[in-house]
Length: 239
Image (cartoon, rainbow, N blue to C red):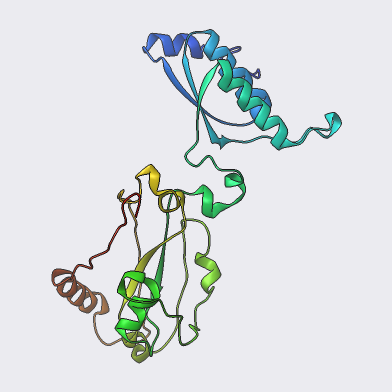
């Protein structure tokens, strides 16, 4: 455990890295003007190749000096990049650190078909490739948290309550993308990258007289086996 600003000054970190033959170091953490600054400079002086992930470093204000966190952060990053480290950032646009929709690489959300919504209406509401998008024609009540629960972040949880008949009419579920720099910056060529997504669905029915898990598993396997693809036109650069 270090006891100084630099991670090298009060530890055997340099010796350990050298013994292991490690020459490339990636630095993240806190804070820009202090520990990150001194650690990167020390590492560079010790002949390590230093990389700083700009979006993974934080800073804070210095009121006594009349300096804001943003000013200190920008000056520190400029000094490090000039002579000590390679700076990387996935989405280097002004304001990206303050806007989650611009900061994240991609985002995925889920949605259920409304009880009185047709399959075509549901697909058009969430996929522009299925035709001109249409707004939802009815509200979606009975969720414990509602739409705001999945409006941000990457881990979402909600509970819907209703009758079996209502649930049966909601027989389609969609996973759809939301704004992120993979989509917003097509020039980076990342919009076709694969990403992992897990959706866990549990079903609770009091006094059910059948094995719901077995019934759902059979129905799900049948539908998965008969799944149909949807052709999506992805514009190339210049289109």
